[in-house]
Amino acid sequence: MPRIVLFSYPGSPWGAKVISYLSLRGIEYSECCQPMTWPRPDLQLLNIQYRRIPFISIGKDIYYDSSLIFEKLEALYPQQPLGAKEPSGKTLEKLVEKWAEGSLLNSVMNLLPKSLPFLSDSIFLADRKELWGKEFSPDALEKGLTKSLVEIREHFAVLENLLGDGRQWLLDSEKPGLIDIHAAFCFDWIINIPGAQINEFISASAYPFTWRWLDRYRHAIAASQKQGAAITQLTGHDATNLILESDFAERAVTVMDDPTRLQEGQVVALYRIDDMSSSVKHRDVGRLVGLTPHETVVAIKAKASDVEIRVHAPRWQFEVEVAL
Image (cartoon, rainbow, N blue to C red; front, side, top):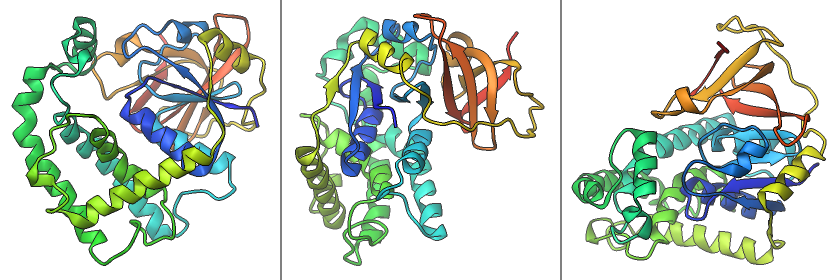
């Protein structure tokens, strides 16, 4: 299997989530650090227009969005997976993933300390306003803090109720699973930021089972990282060369009958639909080579050469259409 390259930036909660998974699995990878804001010149070498972070490459296959990344890593690296095995566990795992992505992270963001340097960076603030269509400034965080604390108490209460029977992990397993990563990554991210506005309403005394679970989670990741191989840092050119000189990670892709009526080989545009700019400015255009109920695969030509790579995206929160 070609070596994984993680494209992320320091401090990204989603990047930290993927790193936690890779660490707990003991999967070796390289990292190509990116700027916090667009543009990201390294990506232009691959002709990637995708705006969001993180994504990974495995050979000439590029995987967008953490939900698809985890599905692929579970399938392509089947030894000792972290995902649930039983249907009920798989269902709860997916529900927790959507809960954390759709609700929990938004609540946690307002706990960021207002003194963080990037919150006074005009380039960062303009970038995030263009992306989300709203202010992401110290004043905006302060205005949302009370509401977030109210919401986070509810989130903690859900976990406290489940963990209150004494289980160590959410599915009562012997070690942390994918569901624990889904539920813990937001809290783990904010807790590790010095000065985060965590007060008595969401303290360890108020939610003891949840905080002990978070401690176990952090210790498990730290132990895995201590035992794991060193992470190789790559420049954009090195990462591009590694990708273009590798084989594809997946051989079989297919275009199935689909409500879009798209056909194999059509030139299509692939983009996210859950932000304010991707549908206009961040469209990957190429040949449709894969389409299932869960995944879209588009072949594009890298700018650094005439080599074809494939970008993969989940159907959830992505659109694919005929390119105009």
